Length: 347
Image (cartoon, rainbow, N blue to C red; front, side):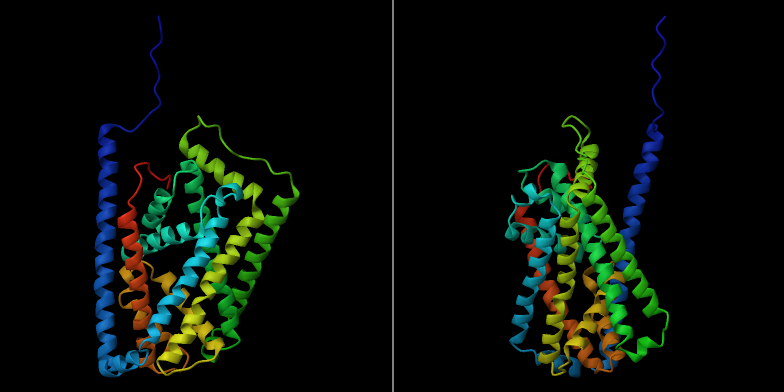
C-alpha cells in the first residue's frame, strides 16, 4: 500500500487571511503615522514663522534673487556622484552596460518617490530596480540596488561620525557633551578598520564565485550575485562608499553659497558644520513626508547652535526646500513617464 504523501506544514487559508490582514493593518498604520507627521511638520513650520516674523524671513529669502538657479544647478553634482556610486555597485562587466546619465535619471526617480512617500527608501528602491534596462538578469540589477544602498548607508554613517569628530573640536556648544567626541572617533576608527580588513582579506584569498545556476530560485540567484560581488569586488565596493561620501560632502558647497546669497557669509568650516548637522537631522526625521517643517525647523536650530541669525536659518531651510521639491518633482515626472516593467524586483 502506497503511503500517503507527507506535505510540509504550511499556512492554512485562515492563517493566510490573518497574515494579509496584518499586512493591511501595518500599511494603514504607516499611512496614519505619515499623516500625523505631516500635520506635526506643518504645525511646527507655522509656529516657527509666527515666532520669527514672516516678513523678515521672506525678505531674507528674497536676497537670493536669481542666485537660487545656481543652487538648483549644484544639485546635479550630488545626483552625478550618486549615479557613479551606483555604477560601482554593479560587477565590473555589468556596470559598463549602464551609462551615468541613465543611472542618474533613475536615481532621481527613486529620490522623488522616497521624498514624497517616505518608506525607509523601500518604495524608491523597488522602482529603481524595476526601471533598469533588462540587459542583465533581474537578480543582477536588484543586487546592484541593494549594494548601492548598503554603500550609501555606510557612507552616511561615516560622514556623520567624521563630522561629529570634527565638530567637537570646533564648537563650544557641542564640546560640553564630552562623550560625543570619543564615541564618534572610536566608532569611525572601528568602521574604517572593519572595511579595510574586509577588503584586504577578500583580496588576498582566492575569490570563490557564488553564482547559482540559472534554474535555481530567483531569490537564491539574487543572494548568489550579492556573494559574488562582495567576494570578487571588495575594492569596487570601497570605491562606491567613498563616492557616496563625496555625494554627502558636495552639498557643503551649496550651504556655503546659500549663506552668501542670504547675506550671512560663513567660512568653509561653518558650511561643512551646517551640512553635517543637516544630514544627521534628516536621517533621524526621514519619515516626515517631503521634510515638511523639519527642513526649516532643523536649519533654524542649526543656525541657533552656530550663533547665526534665526531668520537666516529659516530662510536657508526654505531655499533648500525649494531646491529639493523642484528636483524631486522632476524625479516623479521621470518615474511616471518611464513606467515600471512587469517583472518584480527581488526586494
